[in-house]
Image (tube, rainbow over all chains, first blue to last red; front, side, top):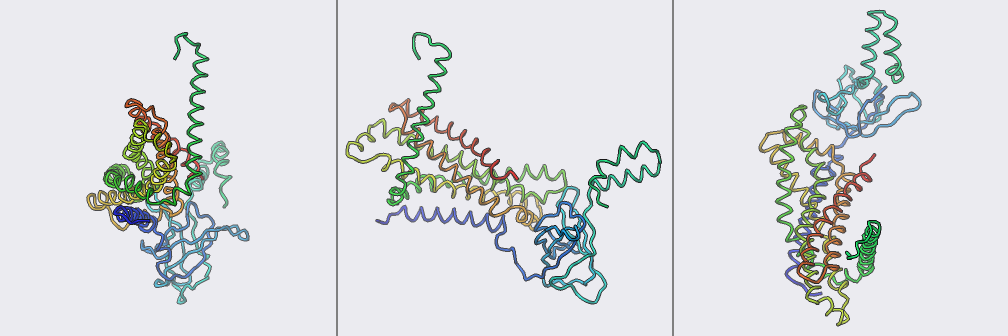
Length: 171
Length: 263
């Protein structure tokens, strides 16, 4: 096949297109930095994770120090088992506690970690039991309604309020 | 149609029959193009010239429109998101809407206007000037020599153009959001990166633009090939290319979106 001047231009065009795809994959979808640093994995058990999703941030004092790797259900304890990948340069005491928080009113959910007082540090494979579940709006409302009903102690208010929230409430 | 004033039902029947015949011609041409695609790709010089004509020449309009669509998305997205106090999600909004929908769709519409009309007019004029018939007389198959390289050129150029559009649009959103309005650059990119998935979003966008490339290029070729060999015929075929290709792209987009992004 003979070479021609359009070869160069078509090659350039294809390069620009490939660069655009690469830009989208790397810069906007972040293909590369999935494991940007070495990390250690710990597992946390939550009663209710609410809307937590994989790749959500783990923050301490507002700084991202890890990510949610995987979420699964543990049918022994009937809890959610959340695997966290924590950056190796940050270590936390063994008795640190986790809670699921929401950024802003409508924002996404993330895990906040509160340092404990133990001398020993968390290591890979540890299971954290000191957790606080996500705030589920329905539970909050049903608690509010229960306490309201208890305050006024009027019988007709309770049956109307209980069925819908009561069915989802585990506690 | 006829002087005898045909009944409504026979009019309807005639119209449906005509549409079916058109559909049959289109399907036959499509199958023919697919069947000879192997030999068409072997003569890559012809395809390369078409990529140059359809792709390189469209690059300017695609990147400029991408930039301005990104600007507008950045501005409008900011005004809306700011009300809910989540203006950092602007990067996510711009990137997702560009990569999933606007990139492939607007590129396809522009491609139909920029490249599709050129294809239709070129082939329609070849037909009007009886060049296609002359080729057949010389035992050169015009579908193989003229249509197939243009078909493949369009299919290859379209996904690349859509990717350029999306990438330039993201940069446009960044210029408005970060440089002009002053959203934090870190959260702009990190929200985008945590929300955009390589395969689900970027990959599906590329699949979409590929499908649109096939659609637009084929509609343009078919309209040119079936045009009435007169000046009015060619002009009508060119108009029909834009109308049919745009409607097909928008309809297919809805279909593909329901298939790809329904959970």
